Image (tube, rainbow, N blue to C red):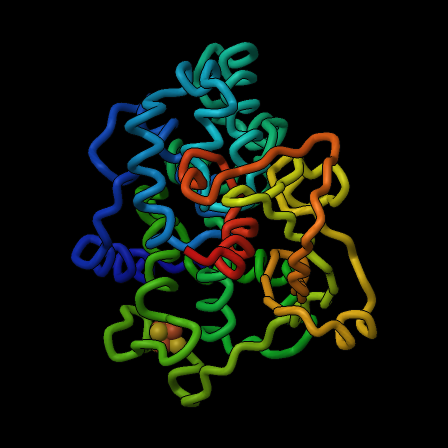
Length: 329
Ligand code: SF4
């Protein structure tokens, strides 16, 4: 079902309602490639409102692909500090190097070649094809999925499979303004067809929406329940200084500074009388007991950080959260 008028209705709404985002500014083609690449990588797993200030700072410090390919890792990580999922930053730099070496400094306008770049998978390559190269792709992000499930009232397991949702994108039809069109559908998902309390009265496709007709907006998803894991963090303090180690033990936060930690079982966790904190990671919920030790400990790969000096170190939010729970000023 190819429907020209849906794209017109959606684009009309977009032209009048889109957010002004720093990566949507009027740009040269080369800037558009770089800005889209950086923003799409930042937007993997992170919300728009969180990304905006990071993006602006990143572009100020690292304004183009060539500079990115030569940026030292310390500066790169400083620009990414707090955004999480640090492998994204490392992959971004590797991608910049590869584009310069193998693609003459320009993003390839070919989906298979895009997928050869570090950190760029199915979704991001599709987004780049649409946004940068104005090709007729509609990236299937969480927003687009939600709209499809509601508009077409998809509830059954086979209906909400990724494969089927990709097929159902036909609902949106096509537009010669593919770049704007892809962004406009995602924008409706973000601003109108929200997960809770969708603003159906303002929705440009409400007349075609089965969920609206049936007044049933529940979304079926393949629920992802994170595994709960238990840890003990060991806090060694010497005057104002805290001992951190470079993590080469756990698969998460690899090579970043963390407090010495070990995994424990649920029984040990429950019997511990120490302070406890919970930290949500992308693939697990961590329950951590904070064990403040008296003795000094010396470990390879470790360093002592003065609590007044935390700002000058590149620390993952994970470590900062534990710091906040133990520091007494
Ligand atoms: S009418 Fe409501 S439920 Fe349907 S797509 Fe629009 S916002 Fe979503």
